[in-house]
Image (cartoon, rainbow, N blue to C red):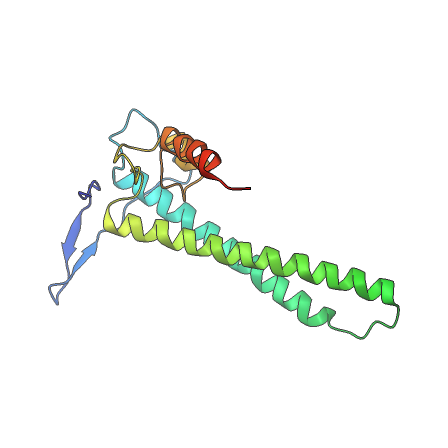
Length: 157
């Protein structure tokens, strides 16, 4: 897939390329009237993903700490069963968070590769509204809907 990103590279003293810092006002929100995936939009989504990743990792750390603190010997069978159910739910949540961090990392990698914001199926731009709501999206809404319809048809129950 071609590199769609408009990037400004500056040369470091060692000759390696490094992206120049993009100024982004605190109240910046991408709009359709701008060139798609211009430097400001790319930086906006990069920061959004990095912040989201930080929040997810912080939640995960909190979950681990509460699970460590919550380990205790509970004599009542019903209370112990309830505690085990809670632990199981926390572990499932933590697994979902791990998968989400992996998807966020993938989106950050696509930013670095200049492929962020473009549908992996059609190569067309993914709408800014969709990216703002789900910055880990890899498909346009239309391609995602086709994919989900196809999954339902081919699913074996």
